Length: 562
Image (cartoon, rainbow, N blue to C red; front, side, top):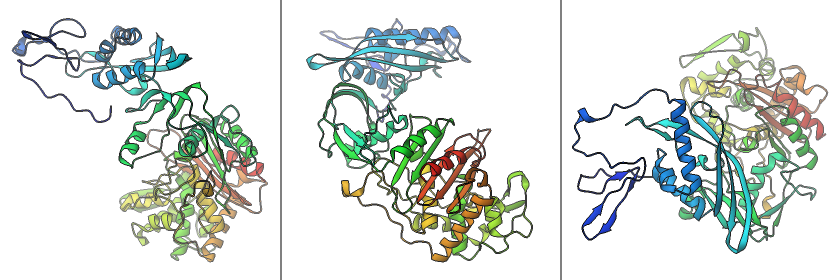
């Protein structure tokens, strides 16, 4: 796995290459060549082009999909790794992972059952036994899927090889290993000392995995015997001393329990329970709650439990980004809360024509009115007065974003506001272009707007492992902070956020956002707000307007924490 090199072409005097392998028998007279898959010897290089069979093209037939899937699954189930690997379009990678399935993962007595195909895809169930040394055994069962494709050079149908065919939690390069876990388990506690489990809080699976990865070796526990997904990126980091730790290793089956260490988090049991309930109401939703005065993370939840969008998502934030842009314009004297500010139907910059939702305009209105109604052109019209890197500097220097240095206790994506030019720079001002955020980032943004100073969010206190929290190089001025709070308060009271925030004032503020995404019929809906010493943000992917989708989730969290 990892980077693979193609075998160099060989002359006819060399051993034949069949299905990506060289089959040889060493004897007194030399080499004998054997076909390993499909029968028959390799074609003679001297065959004329007129003898070549026509390459089959076009969509795969149902028979081709079924027969290819059956051949692969039958060979895998019987332990014939060579034949199974040769039925794929990446023989070497398939052979490595399928060999490790038995020899490193210790998975035995495998039964693979194909289900009804869907086009070129064939779902299948896997049942087996993890049987480790000393008589340790546990059953294993899961669902997976393979896809059949046609090889370009000869039209042959083959299984399109990816590691997730073997197990859905595998990424290409990962592997399955059974043995003593490299990292002891941890018992994660909420801020009140209660245990955090996925049975109680389903969203926390990735968070608990991350806590174990980070603190398992230092929290005083002892490793058990487990079947685990070992990430390729983690191995790379171990080997080189650098690399990504964005996706932690994952335990699939526990054969013998280790002794867990204890890690206390900042999560509030009440708010976490509310967050779980709220995101369950909206597909593809995520939310985070933090404490503005300290940065403590009080809740994190995702409707989809396989990926932690709340902490690691990378999505255009839409108009919630206008919080940062507004602070920049106020700092530069290009906007002031109660001064008149243009909000035309259209504004052109860098060759792009930007418009407002439903092409509305505000004649003679103030910047506060434009912010509250989320007027795009009020921000785009100022692009010509800004340098390409102004927004990037504001995001980094004031809001602590985009420098990949947050240390919250588990992996995060810390936002990205790249330097752009022309139309893309203008689009960034309204949270499109190359700007990328997640709910953790946007909860931090509204918290900074509320207090005037960036406090890096954290899930585990830095005193536990002597981490250094990220800092911003400057705070907002008192005047900019006051104006920004007024903008957000007015938006919560009388702007696009008013319906969701009804009854939560007066110490509150909010901003809505909708982010267009190519290929989506509906935009991603964003909402970020504060009430008292709570700040929260949420996103509903493909949900529509933020005030109607993410807004009720965030408002419910702020109300629950009051």
